Image (cartoon, rainbow, N blue to C red; front, top):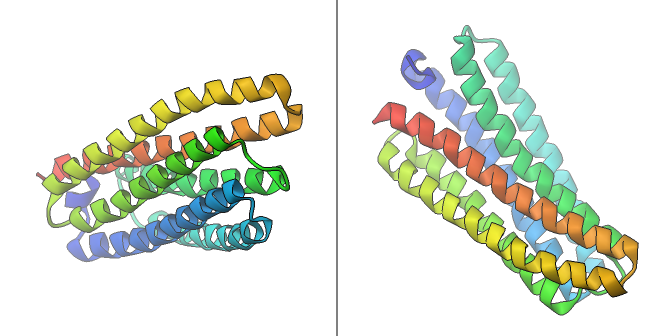
Length: 220
């Protein structure tokens, strides 16, 4: 029997409320991290620093909510399999924020140099798709208790966004390798780490979608 059918409706609503709060912070982290990328590409060092500070504080708040959810789970007599399901959902969602924070931190380190135009354009597109995927996660959670079939459709949309990010990464990696042939090693490494962190965030969005899809299928 799944977690969602085993626990009471009240406790299910309480857990979802906590998780929604967590997802809201994760969405805000990604929104601010996308702005970091935009301003990095534009060469606005002051705004990069401003948005980075916002990312740092929001990610810290997301961590606080995550710990509260895990404490709630520890206080309940869940079946181990059910607890593992919700813990995986929370931790994987939290990873999205962690990777967004990581790419923002690398962006700060890259300054004051400008990102090559083609690479910057790709980074902005990748980050925007991660932001879109994260907002889809938020929407899926709203549908989970009342319309699980819609969750399946949203999960498919998130998967498509992740695939798009992967395609962009494949192309921009070639650009980064060309840049590495003539650029400084430190800048080359930072560009690759920014790229990888954005892709990892997209991967985690897909992982969250997989968990939500599994829960939704149990509710149909």
